[in-house]
Image (tube, rainbow, N blue to C red; front, side, top):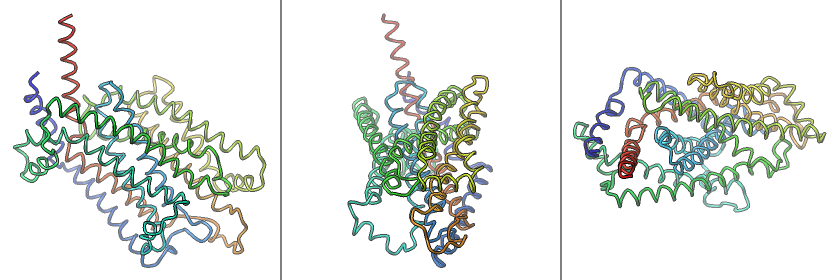
Length: 444
């Protein structure tokens, strides 16, 4: 196989997806920018007028901001874990989805902590978290874990991009000058020699182990922020593994949706095939069983114990959030399970639909963990006005939430305009390995 010729063919094949912006791409970018600008306007209003423009009050101090934070950070940690595992697999199937997972990991870890900042009433005092940290506080450990994981995931992502930067540098003479200079700088003089390739692969494998460990530790710390309190609904010994399983559940779901959209709008059917959706769907099926088991254990133990505060929390759930509870813990688990369990239903569209249901159910589950718990205080409060006890998100919160999601999608679109969403270096490595196997078989 002529490697140089094959690299030119791949650059030519992926060039339309990288360089050209079609009418549909421009429409989506315009819509996403509009949502982001609306979110910025909402943020300015919140800073000027304070948290009174949100649904958060002295009793319910957290709302959908913290839920979005948990969801995105959970997504980033699950992506890091899945990415690390995939690097240890020898199957060529991983090549088509590897970059999607890596991009989702880094972007989620950037977007997620922004929602924590939106919960802070005095952003001018934000620097005190770094100047006067309390090592006894789980929040301090969460900040350390997030920053460490962000740096690690960014380095990890960049190292996986280097071979493609080098290919685009050497075969991108038809591209704009600014792109050629950018690829030359980012490739770091990588020449794809056997020694460089071996050294880079070794570094990536080492980083993948570190990322897996960081993902488990960091998300456990996030769970402990809740479980180390005495608040009914949060004080639980299984929150750390529960959060990790839930993170994997949402991570696989988002990856399946991203695979579907990339496959459809980038016309990459021959790279992202049905077998990728079947494998991801089966993984989602297995995790749904674990997630459903943890959810059942959590609620059953609270109901069976008949502790006063736990019963009060369950009464709040079943009186005010009955249908949300049904959707989060039944529909969000059973619908994906039954769709994927039966082989005849395992079509690309149905697997993607089950992923959407799973993600919506998981987000609602996070809502039910945070809001009803705060609406059922451990210590009775004096002022019991409904607007102080019951939480309802305002348009400000929804605008900022949609703005965060739009930022995530926009940056994903821009990154895959910089490098192909399917690694060219991975395609070449697979073809090189296949040729080596064929040569070895001929010799035998």
